Image (cartoon, rainbow, N blue to C red; front, side):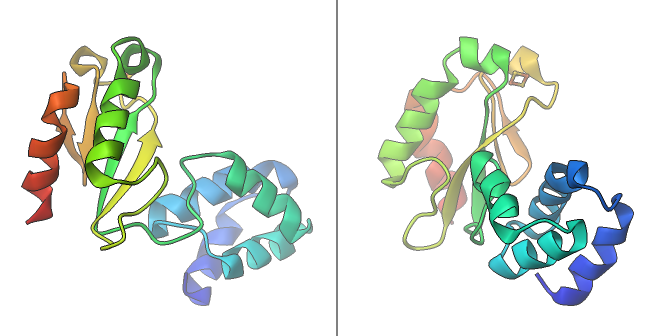
Length: 151
Ligand code: FES
């Protein structure tokens, strides 16, 4: 992230260790990932070590340390989607694209990532591609959805 953008964002959070996860989520949401440079700056702001920041950053699977691909496919890991088999759908996409969750395809086109419930549980199991919601998805839908967004 550009230094100036992070510098503008940090003062919105209390300068205490308890702000760490909120800062990381905000940076990740706003800029797509948290860079090594960001880790150092956040550590300095909160007066903790870069290792402490990195430990939290790598603990949460929805936080990224590298830029995402052109399209991010987000799989809801909320309870309703879990009960309705989101794991089988994740597996179908992983096999179709040849990458694991949290990874980006070698051509930089797709990133697979978990996401939290957005309240559309009636559509479980649910995934999103660049904000477009796909509800009641089945594993066999994976190739069609990938092709739709490959263009
Ligand atoms: S649990 Fe997946 S949309 Fe609510």
